[in-house]
Length: 436
Image (cartoon, rainbow, N blue to C red; front, side, top):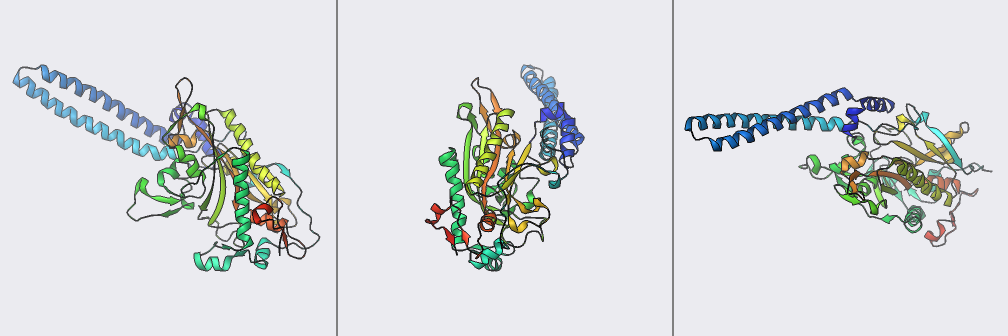
C-alpha cells in the first residue's frame, strides 16, 4: 500500500507511476474519497465534542424543564454522532480498496516500456554451448531416462501436471538442497518452513491481491468469508515476508534474512497454449526463496537488491549454466515493485536458430518493494531514538524446480543421450556422475 500522506502531497507522482505500469487507476477519485472520509471524521469529532459538553451541562441543570430540553438535545446529538460515524466508516471501507489498487511508482532508473519486449539486457555470464550433434530437448531426455512422467501426471491431476521419477526426483531435490546450503551455510540466512495455505490477509498484505488474484488457487471450506478465506501460495515470499506482520522489530536486529523451500501453486491464467510441452510452465513446483527485511533506507534497499541477485547468480555459476541478467521495464515489474531484475538461463531447446535471445528462459526474479508490503502488513521497526518506521522488504528466487532442470538436462547432455551430472550436484546424488 502506498503512503496516503505522500499521495496527497504528490498526486502526479502516482498518476505517472500508474501510467508507466499500464495500470488504470483514478487518483482523483481516491483523493475525493479521502477528503470525504476526512470531512466525515471532522464532523464526527465536532459532534462528539458537543455531545460531551452537553452531557456535562445536563448534570448542572436544576430546572426540570431545562433538563428535559437538554436531554432531548442530547438524543438528537447522539443520532447525529452515530450518523457521522457511520459515514466515516463507509468512506473508510470504500477508500481502502481504492488505495489497494494504486501501484507503487517505479524508480527513476527503471527503463520505460510497455511489456517484457522492452526489457533491457544488463549483462551475460557464460557462453552457450555449441553442440557437435543435434541436441535433444529436456522432454526428450526426460522420456529417454524416465525422469519425468507427464502422461501420468496429466491423468492424475490435469494439464501441466507431472511426476518426477528416479534420478529426475533426485536432481530436483539436489538443486534445492544446494540452494538451501548456499543461503544458510554460506550467506547466513535463517531457514524457515512456511505455511503454503494462508488467509486472504496474507496475500493482500504481500501485494498478491487484489491484482494477481486470478493466479491463486482458493481452497478451504465453503463457509469461509472475507479474511478467513484461504489460498495456496505461489511463492514462499508470502510466508517469509508476513512472518512478522503486525510486529514492531528492533532496528538492532535488522536486517532479517530468511530463506525457505516450499511447494508453490499457480494457475498460470492467461497462458493457454504456451509452453505446454515439458515442465517450463506448470501449476505446481518447488522453489527456494530468499527474503530480506531491512531498515527504511533506499540506498540500503538498492544494495540488498544487488546482493540478493548475486546470490542467485552464484548458484547458477556453481551449476555452470550460462545466463543473462535483465532489468525489467516499467510495464513488466508489476503493481508492487519499485524495480525488478530477472535472470534468464540458457535453454538450448528454446533457441530458434536465429535470435540469440530466444534461447534464454526466465528462471529467477528479484524485486525491491521499499515499504509497499510493510504498510499492508503493518510491519515496522523502532530505531535507537524510539521512533517507529515501516520496514523495507526485498525478495528473490534462489532456484525453482523443475524449471531449472530444463537447462541442466539440456546443457549437460552427451552425444549418446546420457546426461552428465553437474559437479556441484554430485555430492547430493551419492557421487553419481552420469545418468544413462
